[in-house]
Length: 111
Figure 1 (tube, rainbow, N blue to C red):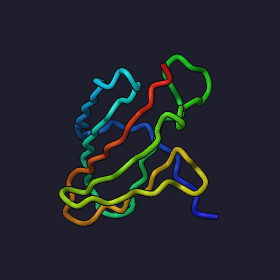
Figure 2 (cartoon, rainbow, N blue to C red):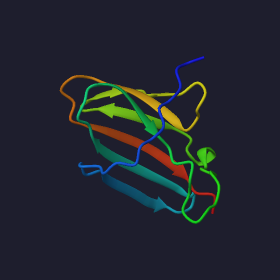
Figure 3 (spheres, rainbow, N blue to C red):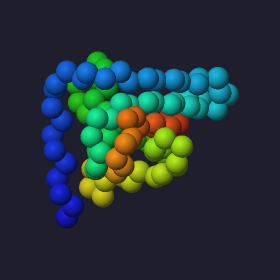
Figure 4 (cartoon, rainbow, N blue to C red):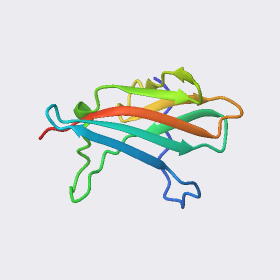
C-alpha cells in the first residue's frame, strides 16, 4: 500500500490563489478552470479535491464531474497522478525554482 496521505491542517494561507473560470459552454455544461497556486517549497506536493460541499452534511464531492486534469509547471507541461487509494488526492512533484503551480481542468456540470 502507498503511504497514507497526511490529514489536512486548518492554517492560514499566506499566498493568493488566482482562479479563472470559463463558463461560456452552456450547451454542454462544461466549465473550464485555470488555477494558479503559489508554491513555497519544491518536492512532492499533494493537491486535494474537496470532499465536502457547502451546506451538505457528509462528504459528497463530485469526482465524476472532473473528467480530466493536467498540471503545468511554468512553460513545461507535466501530468500529475491520482493517488492509488484516495481518489480525491493528486500528486505533483514540484521542481526547484518553481514559484507557482498552474492547474487546468474541466468541470462537467450535472445541470
